[in-house]
Length: 533
Image (cartoon, rainbow, N blue to C red):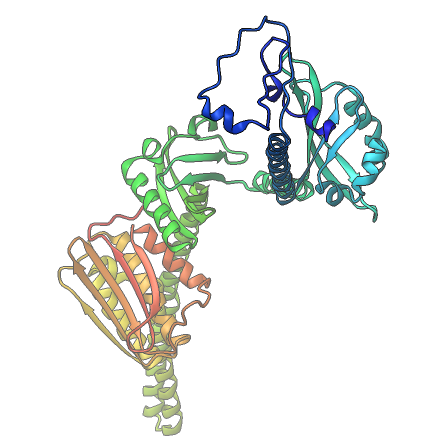
């Protein structure tokens, strides 16, 4: 008990600096109370400590208070250590504390066993035990790092450790000095975590980025990464082509600043359409460069919540080639049509006259059987002449130049009815007049190709051709009751491509889909005063 009393706080034992007994005898408590308040103690000289005598009850009370205080402190310390242990465990990290001078481990959190797959007790007994899990290439470097004083700016490191199965894991380690009030380092605090998944993810991202860069390098087109508002986030110029402008000048700028108003509105429309539908969008436009007008084709695809990748290709040369091929085809059709009309047609006409003359001569000689055969030959030749003229008109519609588009379409409808034995109805609005012969030729060829498809492939029995004027647009429709158009089916036939190209040449749009009567409908919309590009 005496030893416990000696360890009580010094403030309990402080008394006056005079050597005298100030305790009240326990045998006379009542008398002291009746005499009134005790007299004031005389002043004692300073520097003369004196331990007063305490009663046993008072000493036990003080001991109980001190014991409770220490129990509360120990409980708070245990709770704090438990919170610290759970926090380090849930964070997926482990912490350690070592003496800065001796490098002796003072504390290692439970996470050490999860990361190193070694027991904490071994680390206390042998502080460098964890180096045994470090591959040979890292052991010396890590030993030097832990043995040197920790300073600001040199407290991070990443290295690998090997598990019992030989698998390697990446560890990120950070060390911090703990100093006293004078700035001297007393302890070293270390925080380590397993970053293997993060390293693998970084390696995968780097590999994907390298593959993407290689893919983009192989793409000969311009590639834009655009934000919803039209801001250019990234730009790759076209391969083997002069850039529109240096890429450094494009990044961060907006499409509305770089493009003409009409082209910018078109680009923003398809940008928003790509984001809203989450489907690939394709559109074409023309842009005036310093040399001449260029044609571009853009494909936009969603690449993020508010971002789009646009691949833009210069198709000027392709357009010129398509135009030349179409012009060559038209010239060849015209030449063949003229040859059929002026060459083969004239020969057949001559054979018809000769067969008639032969028929009369045989009849005059009363050779009725031979005359009948000559008449049959003449009839067949007349049929061949009629078919030749129909072919010539299809290849070279002279009526377009002489009487206009409507007359040419009427002749086409009559020819189709005779050749395919189907009903072809033509309904043209008088207001939908086309005076440009080039535009009329494109429209005629579109109708011709669509009717041939209806008769040959769609097995239609009725075809209806309408040409209407709506506000500032002409609308051409070719509708049949054939086998029908299946949504999602491939429309990569040469005939459809040529019709699409002809529609673009007159500044129009081309659409194909199922009709209301179960067949197929082709719709071309173009301006009344359109001029072929």
